[in-house]
Length: 319
Image (cartoon, rainbow, N blue to C red; front, side, top):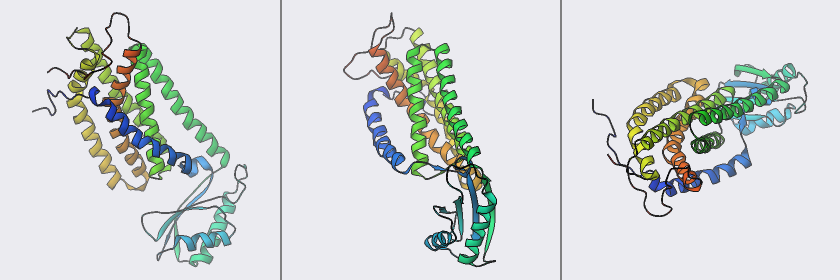
């Protein structure tokens, strides 16, 4: 079977400035949105009560909010869930940050307000979930700890397998992917649940795996003493691994697309985050990580290795 993208000579390192511009074009507005709107945490992290309601007719979100306010439920989050007849309501009746077990009181208050607003028997409670604020805070801390531990494990692994220059470039590319995915979650207003945190950690591992494969090929090509500078070796290594990248991530993308379309509301956030994470992971592995390594090697060249020229076009990979 013919392999796709075999024998290519794309100049990935040579277009690194365009990659920086593209990254900045996404990151600058994304960071602003993240600061202004933040993340939409699920009930697992915030604590409180979640109720999914499906009415017999269309519901106006403004009317629903007014009815909840009249029923003593202030600051509730109301989101449509697939249609104008179905909504997800997140609410608390206790003071935010308190440890009061207000689950029963919140459910009672919600049902009372909905009965007055929509009419008794005119709606159905599809699901109801509750998490105490103390448990939600602990889950959020553990999620952040899991991400921090993952970065630490990556750093230790790369320090053992490669020299510190490779490790620093890989960490930078991985941080690019994680932060970019978080901004995407904020932009899409996806609910940050434990499932989404799992998707974020999966993106981290996917990005690292692709970067390590390319860097491993760079190390092998450097041992061959090829008549190429660092830029040429980086280009050669990326082009040599390109067929595998296209095949592997192409099939993964098709799987994630299938899950996003047919997987249902529970698994869909995981699939959507992973779908975006595959794109950003491949992008950073081909453009960000090699460009960072190129800069670091020029800035702090290892002994016995001639640094790449600071100016001029980076030689393309030989076939």
